[in-house]
Image 1: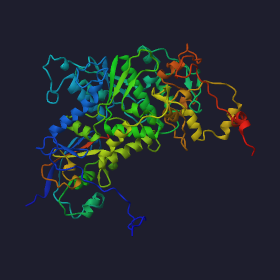
Image 2: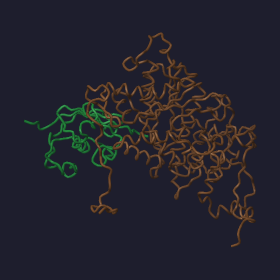
Image 3: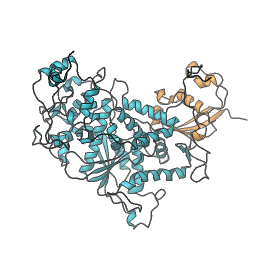
Image 4: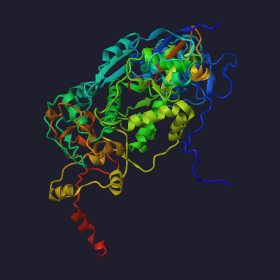
Length: 502
Length: 121
């Protein structure tokens, strides 16, 4: 008789380990040579792997180079602007840089077959100017190493490519911002991260150094998981604004299939389900400019796993500088780190599952309407985020309610203009506060946190340098929203006629 | 007659060399069979204790490297009796998954490459 109880031996039920390749050790493509690599259960020899790898790269990039997608006939690649490549020092960006160089800077005849002769329009240089941008984060994260020189040495080996190093604190550097010709930004504006409404005030001193501003911003974060999320957003936006300032039509990132699966799962775990599409590919228009010119953000390695990238890097003798962990010292690993460990472990035994994660996320359609773009991460804001959050969580202690009751001032709030991820990043506290991020934390002061330059120059804040904003940020509203928390007694008054007697 | 020692070339890529004196290439000599008696308690691997006398394979090489070459943080190299997830192994330029993974019996002159895909980040 069948039993639903646990087996008697009490051992953990484990999925049976299967063989790593489907059929034989012979390459599935040429069917002649002995295989050299197993890529998601499929065996390839070295030669066929190289053509498989470059095919996947081109398939993920070239249909998106022209402003309008290609029809059935492949046309010459004619982008409308320059190219910016985000370089982190990790294996993905090293492989991406190598592939771009071999295809579009100095075509490598061993992997790129030219069609129609050298003079054929199809074989003209695709992007006139290619820049590699590296964002150095070491000033902001304790215990990390400055790798700018190492990365510069790698990029300097590639002629025909420019190197542009920037630093994370440039996100708070108003001189950097103005030099790139963006609309004015108000350096005195800051938000109170200790308050759930993220009230905005214009009380910061305008000459606060960018690095101090960055440290204030990061030190204000409530949890260890919020740190990598906040740093990642700053890096991405710095790359995007650099791209737009350099007339780039495309920004390429070295996110592999494995990295994409990690960022999708970690993002969803942190409330980023509304951004699954943007995580894979995005057509980005800046909040603060009305140019109508967009940057297309593409991840050409999104169909290639980390294992294949590692083998490519080895066979092509690529130098890997490495990248630092964005970790809050003295805390347990955050959601991003735990997700990474899980996905990497999963990929080792069940490599197709990682691909399934990405393909499944590609089929998701976010539910609900969009209410403009977040002023921090510049991704879509789902309508009703705050209302939903208010319904599902206890958000205030008795003491805070008492404080609200005494508060009569109406202060502009940042919260209505944030997506759920950013709102959670800034306001969701853990059970225990993390230790100070910086050992000299006391010198930073604890009050208002500065905001990134693009936030204070977005349309939200652009009403003649004051907080009385009249330009629209959401499709439905023409005025700046002023939010105020209601104390329980006041809430009760509002609904008292509908209350039943106790 | 079988050789008593094997000469193996071990290489590191993707930043894994940082755990091994920052040296990318090592030429090592190791016994062709797992020693029956461990030299001392500190260098005895679990594998050595269990399966002494069997021909040296990659699993044995890993533990030998841990005991003789690894300078820091074992947990970044070995996990649950195999290489940590995210580290690729090539045996003479071929994925070790095609060669039996840790059970591949080492041959004199083999080139074993360990590549990390996890460097930093």
